[in-house]
Image (cartoon, rainbow, N blue to C red; front, side):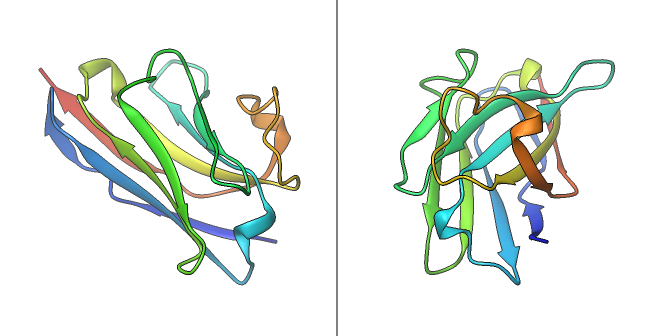
Length: 126
C-alpha cells in the first residue's frame, strides 16, 4: 500500500499562490499516475489535475492556466502549484495514486485511484 502525505495547505488571500506537495513513502511513484482532487464542504470530490509517469499534466477547466502539476522523481514527490487563487478554490486537497502509469481520459474519476493521502486544507479569502 502506498503511503501518501500532502502538505503545503494554508490560508491565503485571493490572487495568492500556494504549492502543495504529495510525498510517497515505502513505494516508488515513478510509474504511477498521480492525481490531485479537492472537496469543499457540501460538495462532491472533484479532480483538479493529474500527472503521468512522463510528467505530462492534465487539468480541470476550472484551473487551467492557474495550476501546474509536476513531479520530482528523485524526491518521490508530486507538486501542485496553484497561482491566482480564487475563493472558490477553497477546499481540502487530496493526492492519489493510480496503478497505471498513464492517467488517460479517466484521470478525474476518483475510483481510478487506489491510494489516497489524508488531505491538506486550502482556504482562499476575498
